[in-house]
Length: 399
View (cartoon, rainbow, N blue to C red):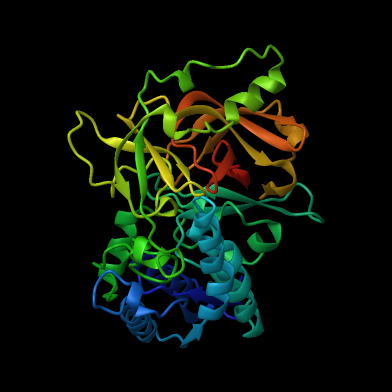
């Protein structure tokens, strides 16, 4: 079947992955259009004096010229500010840690950008994500799409796509999902694409390198506060609970410790509790300890941060988290809580984390995710992604 009458708009980021995605689609005979998203253009918050989005846009244009496909740039900075940046500021001010890349995929790339692509006659939108989409054709009148991990386990980006749903997947192509990164770079080299040797982006979604503290300081002002060390043998970890009811046990295990200044000792100062996140070890500038200090808690109301020494500190480790049941995103709506109980499920709470064995339980208004092994730095505001084997089936924001 010919693809020449099927139009695909590729989100060209100026990186090697989207470049090769566009190349592969042209080789498959699709009518390909390349579009670069300009999401942010405030050079005051970049790491260097360079203008990364402009460099990326130029590389995307050169790739499009090489592939002989139409190219244009769309300015989505207004939508990005309203849907991503403002949300980030609000969450950080509350002491939570949002994931802008997951939000960008849900709110910008596969919503606003997808609408633009469709208005240009696109049948599909394609990106350079290392993930795979398959279909379950058991019922031809009700085809279900499955979102799977990419072939390259070291680059699998399904976690960043955990807020997508069936409506999205119906219009998406991931051309490099069955390739390894080394193969992608080899294809780019072989076809003389300018992005072949370009380093992977470490910045925000389609924004480029951004200094997060500088970014946050636009609205969240510096405010000196205390850094308080909580010892691993502190009484706050010994109080425990004595619940025999299973549901109450889950509630207790998923709760966050409410540290007080009297629970530890002041060992330094910081410039704002809202700049720090649980599990963070850099940025404290406090020495003299045998092991690294990690953030184990923050209080934006009292402007205090609490730290523990060493990666095995009890303040870092938990087995249970919870998400609001009403806010669970079922990527594949063939699944639901009631038909998942008999499945062997896995989950991850951050990008590149190896899948962890879990069980799920509903109690009152929450879904509880219980891990077999202790997890480090379960962080409010981040996402938990739930998998059935390699298929990502659901996700939710950690409370």
